[in-house]
Amino acid sequence: MVIASAFSPALPLPPALPGLGGASSLAVVSPGLDLESSFSSLLEGLGLTPAAAHLVWLPLPMVLVLVSAVVGVLVTVWLERKISAAVQQRIGPEYAGALGVLQPLADGLKLLFKEDIIPARADGLLFTLGPILVVVPVILSWLVVPFGQNLLISNVGVGIFLWIALSSLQPIGLLMSGYASNNKYSLLGGLRAAAQSISYEIPLALSVLAVVMMSNSLSTVDIVNQQTGAGILSWNIWRQPVGFVIFWICALAECERLPFDLPEAEEELVAGYQTEYAGMKFALFYLGSYINLVLSALLVSVLYLGGWGFPVPVEWLAGALGQSVDAPVVQVITGSLGIVMTVLKAYLLVFFAILLRWTVPRVRIDQLLNLGWKFLLPIALVNLLVTAALKLAFPAVFGG
Amino acid sequence: MSIADSTQFLCFLALSAAVLLGALGVVLLPNIVYSAFLLGGVFLAVAGLYLLLNASFVAAAQMMIYVGAVNVLILFAIMLVNKKETLEAIPGLGVRRILSGAVCAGLLGLLLRVDFTTPWALPGPVSIGEGATIRIGEHLFSDYLLPFELASVLLLMAMIGAIVLARRDVFSSDVITGEGVDQGLIEKARTPLLLEKNLQIQPVLEKTP
Image (cartoon, rainbow over all chains, first blue to last red):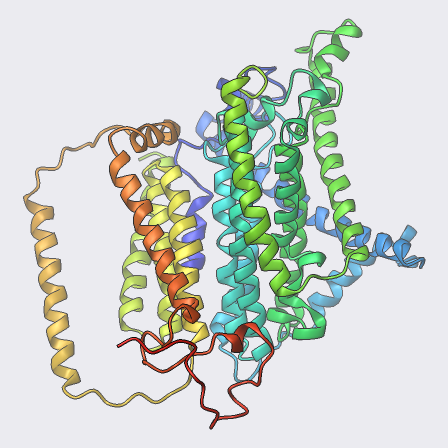
């Protein structure tokens, strides 16, 4: 109970963390859409005080991001079913809605109506708390995902670091549910999950550190802004190809996706820490893993693929069409284009992850740990060192 | 009192209550696993207090190091050795409890005295908020360089110690029990210990006196 209540104050933060639109003072490129100020001025026109307008505004981006995260999961589940079917030359779901798009909803409803079982010898309190502790940090991490210059819940100064810190909370929930199930497979799965996510966090953080070093900021908005200017050529993937690969491998391992899904390896552990779970509690694990996958893909696109940037700079396009970037219509178009680009890049990566899941066999636990500690960690360290050297040698290209 | 102030005050109350109750639970609960999980909750609540002080970098670092690393390792250690065994009654347990309670109460008294006698400057210095990350980095690489390096030497020592304990084939005998150990059992496919209890394991090297 203490753990759950400790999370809640993280959302209503003191004035140092403003809502949507806090980045306006930092914006160097174009101010972009600032929905909060227009929303507030609209409400103030109706006679509300600025404080009341801010209060009305505050929950909107949070609810919007929560809804989009859940819809993102539904889309990913549908993609997973369809792509796995295509890989195995099946048709996949096709009766629930056109092309089976309602299948994930049917899955969710089924889980919702299932009986909520707590095994007789299990520890009821920890058993219930475990899945919550797995989902909450993942959802909180959406706080820092930017969809545009001002289109994020909060432009926290420690942005990407907050995500790393939050993702390090997940093993606690996994250990808790593994222990509370009172089942040897669950305990083994929980221990494996914790070991895996601890070992892959280090190369992950090191590859993020290289990107942070180039952009001189931990804020996700600043990281994307540093990648604008020359469109696709200025994206970090050209400057950090090794970091990109390390990050993606580690992100897959953190999400427990198939080449690394040892914590729930069916042949060895039944379903790992999820073995005893049913109904909505299992659904929370399911939801958490897919939200985490979409979140990781979004962060890869933010860190390495230019975030909301279009492959050709929108300023050039607007200039070629003889329009000012600050014109309202152009702002709306570039804002929507930014959201589409972020989601498109993320879902390309999700597609790649699903394809990997259905083509690549699972590694063994010793191979997994060897890959993490003896290969990825040294490579990530060398990558960091080389980035630092390149930053000193070519400050113009590597963000001096 | 504005909305922001009252929210901050309520958060402070909730977090302080979480810290106090959680800490009491860590000490008083008989189940060690509950204690360990509550310890994680206390660390999280402390991170929340840092957030209230506008120190978001410190809060994130607290979350990553204390909850994500220290607490997970504590849990690991508990779960790897979590055997159900009945502990023998310790003689004079009541006296021991009273003595340790007295020591804790004395510490609390000292801290309270410090709290009341220190002339606190109110309101305290203005927090620098987002600039804190840069400031911390500057301090770590200038006037706090020596403590920083010493801390890393400490971590290195702990790591070497862990390697020595884990790779006991370096020694001929177990460091703690003094029995001969055979690392080959773990690394190579050999008859497991559980099947042949009476098998005498020869020390690899001569026993050191």
